[in-house]
Each structure stands twice: as structure tokens, then as C-alpha cells.
Image 1: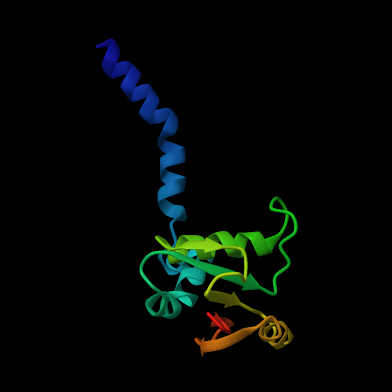
Image 2 (image 1 turned 135 degrees about the vertical axis):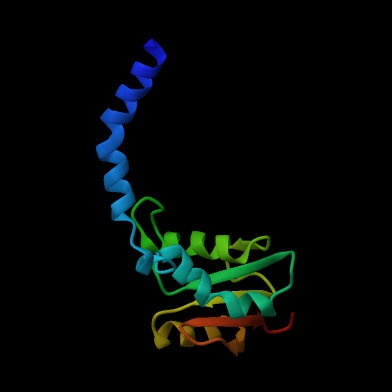
Length: 132
């Protein structure tokens, strides 16, 4: 009898929390989170990359401080989306994924002996290094 009373008390005290959580779910927000949106930007480039190995990553988002900088956030989301590939924050790889928000950065990337292999749209480009 005591166990039933404890269980009933626990359920009663958490009823409000369970009810609020159940009614707060919004099905229209599914697939619109930052992780899913970034992964969908990278779907097409992932198909053009090898299944394993290392690729480089460049971006026009500044990435100086991992704690405060959105540039690192996009880098980590790119690592997640392109797994199992290793994504190095560097342009010193034969293949380099570019994540850009502005055209000026793309031009500066081509000055570093990189050639656009394919533009996947939405700011995602695939580069290869000249001579590799």
C-alpha cells in the first residue's frame, strides 16, 4: 500500500510537468533546427566526396574563439554532417569544402591555389588544390 501511495504522489507532483511538455511539442518545427538545416545544405557535397579520409574546410565565418564564435559552430556542424569523413579546419587537403556567406571570400579562396570543382549552391563549394 505504501508503494502505491508513493507512486501516486510522484505521478501527481509531476503531472503538471508532463502535461506542459506534452502540449509544448510543435510538429511544424521538426526539421527546422540549426543542425538539420546545416546538414541539408551539405547533402549534395557529401555525395561528391569520398566515403572515408580527410577533407579540408574553409569558411568566411570568423572562427577565432571556440566558446563564442559561430564560425566554430558551423565547422562542428560540418564535421557532424560529413561523418565518417574527417574534416580538418585547413585548406591544406587535396579536397576542401567551402562554407561561404559572401562572394568576396570565395574569390580569396581561389587565390590560395584552389580551384572550384563544383558549386553546390547555398554557399557550399567544393575545391581542389592545384597540382594535387
